[in-house]
Figure 1 (cartoon, rainbow, N blue to C red):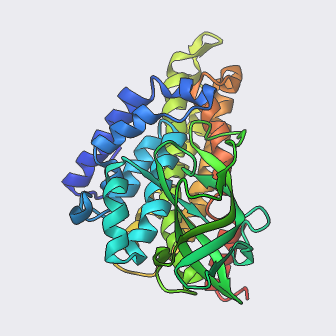
Figure 2: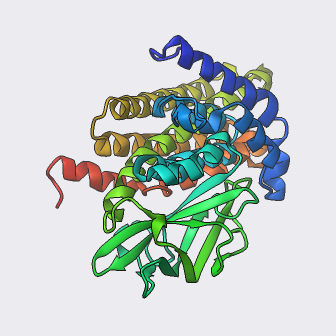
Length: 382
């Protein structure tokens, strides 16, 4: 596969992560997935490789790279397993980036070194049980104590990735801090009143960590406000735009993984006296999958390049998320068909891919939300 114009440094990164995914993750991740167990050992290895610090500054222990490097690593991980890939994506795109982009020097110094090293994980508490795509429908509240020294938080959050691991450091939440006023606040793990519910029984991403959270009179210092008060809505929209590029990279990795597995299986599986790769129906199906994966890659690379260049990426990110999410779902369906009955077995990678693909049309903005963003840009929607 060519490198789509990557620099030598980025091409080397891609090869390094691809080898790690192939040699270290692929042989063991199926067992973690079957047990619904978080792969702490793999995460620690990713931390030692510097993967959590790719897009974070060197002064905080990061690698000093950019978002393109971060997304390249995510795609290569997702070619083998999406649970590991979403752990990295959520830890940085959603967990560390709000602090990196909006935090005070003190907040950055406190949190970013451990997040960049992968010693600790961050989470982003946006979604609520009654407010998914309608993020403006936030019901969680935060009010200042009478002496103004603390935020007192009440409410709940749903589907929060990386929020309940043994190494989770913080959850940055959105909350109503006044009438029509949403702010973002850092809540350290273990704060009294913060209850992490048992992990969800999920269809896919079974080796990633996802929980519902409840906040009952949770008190954190007033200094834990992230960015300006009342600026939370704008901040999380910016974070989501960038996160959608990373999710598109993840979806592209899954789509390409479906191609990889299907081509290999088609070459060795025989039917009616020949490898099934000899039959045009199979050839065309896998060729269509390759086109979808490459098109998705072009879309997220375009959005990432625009982000690095400082452009507004709301529409390019929506295009990438839409294209890649649909490519992942379609490729997973076709890969299962190529594998026949074995594609329905969980021990085959495409069984995991099929289960993991659907959330890519839902998480970090549904397919319908992406279409709304694109339509508004074209002037055909309010």
